[in-house]
Amino acid sequence: MTHAYPDNRFLRGNFAPLRLECDAPDLVIEGELPRELDGTLLRNGPNPYYPPRDDYHMFSGDGMVHAFRLHDGRVSYRNRWVRTDKLNREVAAGRALFGTFGNPATSEPEVRGVRYNVANTNVLFHGGRLLALEEFNPPFELDANTLASRGPCDFEGRLRGPMTAHPKVDAQTGALHAFGYCVDGWGSPRMAYHHIDAAGVLTRTVEFDAPYCAMVHDFIVTERYLVFPIFPLTIEPQRARRGGPLLAWEQDRPSLLGVMPREGSAADLRWFAGEACCVFHPLNAYDADGVIVADMLRYDAGPGFPHADGRPPDPRQAEARLERWRLDLGGATDTFTTTRLDEQASEFPRLDERYAGLAHRYGYFSTTPGAQGRAAVFDEIARYDFVRDTREIYRLPAGDSVSEPVFVPRAADAPEGEGWLLAVAYRAREARSDLLVLDAAQIAAGPVALARLETRVPSGFHGNWMPAA
Ligand SMILES: [Fe+2]
Image (tube, rainbow, N blue to C red):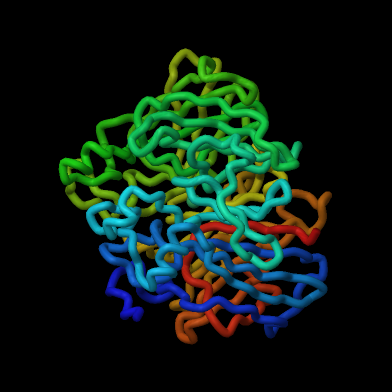
């Protein structure tokens, strides 16, 4: 018997799980859906199958993948849980067995020490595989048409350890650049870079040690360099065994950016230091004349995470702002500089990804004028123009919220920024969602089309566009 879910900030409103898998054909469309949109918008997010056993955090809920298929002016929708081993064990038992993040203190004895994979952070089609991604585990493969679960993907045994939920598709070669951290287990500083070619074959791995073990959510790839950012959001099992937090913010440690040439080795790593801060998501980065330029969404502390001594976080530090960082590879010092570009609280940065690793003009974000330390709820889509230093927004009706916006070019050879932004809106008054399609060059005009869903897509994390085969 499944009981009611507990009261928790990550289980209220549109954070509440959708306890439903469905197929919805031919959604009602308002406006005119652009005919050139032929493919699927995929999204992933936490959706706990059973009521959590302890203090739930949204990073730890079972992944559910949502797919909006667009073809010939029509839209259909499908959603499926990612059936990880963790979820299968719980479904067999008819209740949650694992504590949040697999916490042994709150897990049933029979699953203590069993791998906790929720595959809830991102979903990406690459090399013929549809992959649900979560940074503490290898990717999990789904059927690209049905979303049926296939199982963990270790690239024919070549992937050792977990893999980031934020790999980068190389716009020139189609290869995937990826990395893993905690490769030798919780608290291990061991990291690994992986190159996966366009056919989905893992062709190269470089292992190295970070200066300390931290949560490394995302990284940076330019034409010539890989950059591994280490922020003082540290992971220490020993601290947890003493009763402290496993993940904690350590203000006294520096931020460190490890630069490696793309074809380099661990011996080529050079660490650039800066003041303590935290970035979950870079927008993009490029290198020119020996300088790496990276546009980063900076928090002044690890948002929502306690201090190492257990003190609670400052909610005013739970907002990220856009900065431009520079690493001068020919300079005399191993430090990096930061320049604030925008005071608006922003997250979920996306790009016209044909420009990934190259100089870009536009960035797209979820933003809000009034976050004030609330859990991540965004009610605007923004486009930032780095040439004109201007920001244009589309604000949703009061009470509604919106997902990360995903850019789809109008055509393969269209200029940068000519295309569509796809995002999923939550209609709070009706407790349902709409797929929004905006002209990326005129977002203030609002959606050119929307597809109405009778149900809702819970607040989640990331997704991607999968063009029609
Ligand atoms: Fe992320």
